[in-house]
Amino acid sequence: MARSISYMTGSQLLSLKRRPNIAIVDVRDDERGYDGHIAGSLHYASGTFTDKIPDLVQEVQGKDTLVFHCALSQVRGPTCARRVVDYLAEKKEDAGIKNILVLERGFNGWEASGRPVCRCTDIPCKGNSA
Image 1 (cartoon, rainbow, N blue to C red):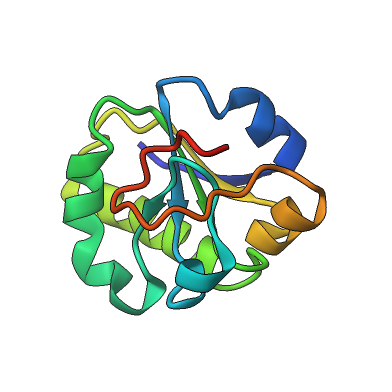
Image 2 (cartoon, rainbow, N blue to C red; image 1 turned 120 degrees about the vertical axis):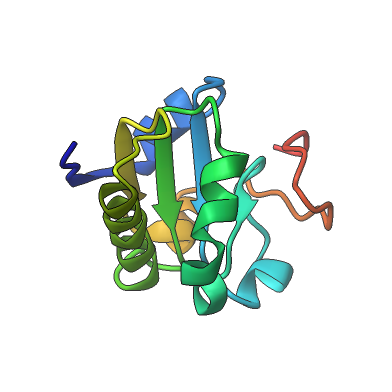
């Protein structure tokens, strides 16, 4: 099934993020550790992302929507989202994933808009801080 990548605003994500079928995928590298993150997000650093796509697909089993972001969602977030689309097409599997989205303005826009930021060091983030 051919998938396209769409964008969503921070407001849209905030209203949907507690739904159990959504996984937020943070593809920032080291900056996640000192800038904080969106509570409950998964961390798959862009530097090693391609090699870890099978792990991501396994981890998000049961989710039908993936929302990717990096700092600004201009390069790393959209690139990693595209890599997942290509991987699923190549493997001829859908893994139940129906929607692949990118967060407009990325983490920086999320935080600048006053949305909740988690600063826990839990891996994975349990998402209770925000």
